Length: 338
Image 1 (cartoon, rainbow, N blue to C red):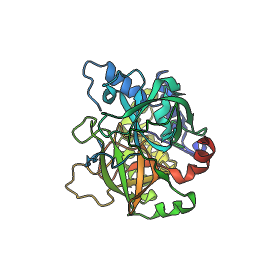
Image 2 (cartoon, rainbow, N blue to C red):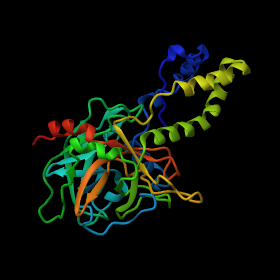
Image 3 (cartoon, rainbow, N blue to C red):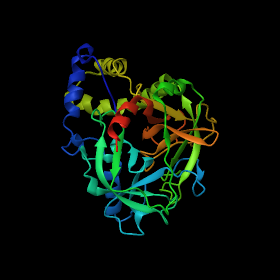
Image 4 (cartoon, one colour):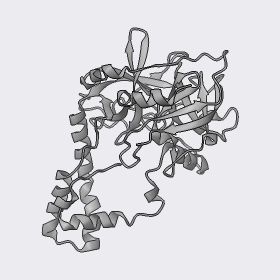
C-alpha cells in the first residue's frame, strides 16, 4: 500500500515522530515494495507453491487476444512456463513488448534482461513461442513508492516465429486520451492473474470494466486507508508516549495533508455501481500486472492503459488503477524505435 503526505511543516510535531518510526523499517523493506518478480520467486521457493485470475472473468478463446504475452522468469524449464509466469504484457511491434515498470523491478533495481523471457502466441502456455529479452527500459521517472510513471518496454532478441499466431495491438492516440475522462466508458481487462478462487489461471481470462471518476476512486482509496490508520497510530503512540488528547489531531493532520493517491498519470476502472450484496467485482489481481487495458471499437482493439496497482482484488468500490498510456506515448515512441 502506498501513502503520500504533503506540507509536513503544517503538521504537528508528533507527525515527524511518526515519520521517524516508519524509518525504523528493515533494510529489506527500504528497498521498496515487493514486486511481481520477487513474489514469484518466493512462491516457487515455498513448500506450497500455490499462486497468489482476472476476477469475475471468463476463458479467452484461442486467438482472441493475440497481442497478450506472459513475462516468465528465465530459469523456467520447457513445459513449466506457467509456474514461472509473473506479469503480463502486450506485443506492440515485432520485437517490442509494453508492460508495467514494477514488472521489471526487483529489490528496487531494474531486472537484468537475462532474467526475463516472454511467452507469446498462446492462451494456455502450450504451442507458443518463448523468446529471450535483449534489453529492458523502465520509465526514467518510475516511482516505486507511489507506483507512478508505471510503464516499461522490453526489446526482444527476435520476432515471434511465423508459425505462431500473434498480433500487435494498436496504442491510444494521445490526442484522443481525453475520452478516458468519461465515467462509464467500457473497457476490457485480460490476464492470467489470480482469480476469485485464489490461484493463477492457466487459461487466459478476460472481463469488462468501466472507467470510474478519478476523484471518486481516489476518495474511496483514501477512506479505506483511513480505516487502518488507527492501528498504525497505536504503535507510534506507545513508542513515543503521545498524550491521548493529541492523537485525534495527529490523525486528522495526516488525512488533511494526504496527497493525490490516484493522479493524472493513472486511470481507475471497475464496477462503478456494484450490487450491494456482491462479494467481489470484476477486477485485475496479482499476475495480471503489466497487461493491457483495452478499448474496442468494432473489431479493432486499442490499448489505453496498463495494469498497475490496487487495494486488494475485486473489492467493491476499491477500483483497479491502471497506467494512463496516453500520458506516456511520447516516451514509448521515442524508446521503441527499431
